[in-house]
Structures are given as structure tokens and as C-alpha cells.
Amino acid sequence: MKLTLKVNGRSTTVDVPSDMPLLWVLRDVLDLKGTKFGCGMAQCGACTVHVKGTPTRSCVTPASAVQGAEITTIEGLSPDGSHPLQRAWEELDVPQCGYCQAGQLMSAAALLKKTPRPTDADIDTAMSGNICRCGTYLRIRQAIHLAAKASPTEATQAGRSRTGAGKP
Image 1 (cartoon, one colour):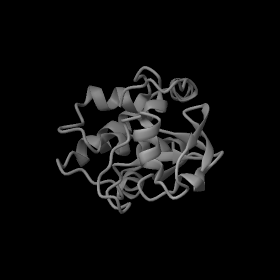
Image 2 (image 1 turned 180 degrees about the horizontal axis):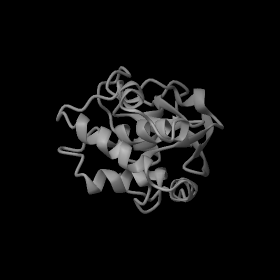
Image 3 (image 1 turned 90 degrees about the vertical axis):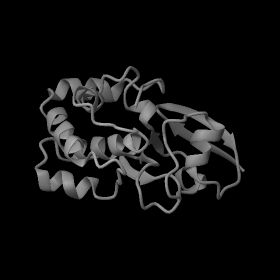
Image 4 (image 1 turned 90 degrees about the horizontal axis):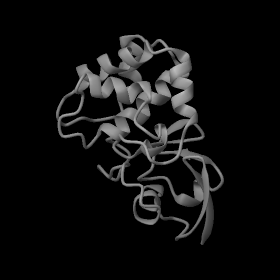
């Protein structure tokens, strides 16, 4: 089935089965390897991307369900890793193994868009669906608070420049 997807600001047509999970379209067809496969059941959050600005588990989302919708992956968060969250993650050395971090960042970005100055409770609620086997939850929370302190201009500029070449 031919589907037109808008990924990281670019429209592209793919020919895939309609029930193919978005995760595999992103990774195997479009070669966007930042989004990770974790559990395959929408329980761990490693596969989180934004669909129309909403954090979405791509491992259980059929590609046909997002035809024409704006999809943002970790590669589209910023082209050069300058998004306030990415800078905060780096500054605080958040990741250990790093496997879950793309999903963590995407959930955190959606939180900050909705709640620019989140409380610890806001962060805990928004991030509760993302599992980190290394247990970096405290650093994740600190990094979200640090990114929230960035100027709104910085966050807006980083969010606008989506070329698909960002770093997680």
C-alpha cells in the first residue's frame, strides 16, 4: 500500500503493508535509526515519536493510521542537537547505555511544549510510560528542569529547524 507520510517536515511516499508498524517504516524503510524497538507492546517508551505533537508509541501504531500526519522523530527534534533538552541531557550526562533515551527525549519534549515549567509531579506523570533499565530517572528529571529554564526563543528555534539530521 502506498502511503504518504510527513516525517520531520518532509513529505515522503512509502510502499508498505498497511498494518506495518510505524517504527519499522521509520527504521527500515526511511533509515531513521534513532527510534528504538524496546518491548513491541507500547509499554517501555523506547519507540516514542510525536504524531501531530502527541507522544505516540510507534511499535504499535500502524503506518496507515498516520498517513498525512506530521511525525517527528528524535532526528527531527533539532538538526544539530541544539534543542534545550538535548543540551541538558548532554550537560548532565543523563544516559548510561542510552538505549531508551530517544524515547525519553521525545516524551520530555512533548511535556515541555504542553507545560513549559513543569513540577516534579508533572515530569513524573509525563515520563511514567518510559522505562530506563539503567535507572537514570533522577538525572532525566534534572535535565527536564534545566531545559525548561532555556529561553522560549531557543526552544522555538530548535523546534523549527527539522532536517532529519539531529543527534539524540
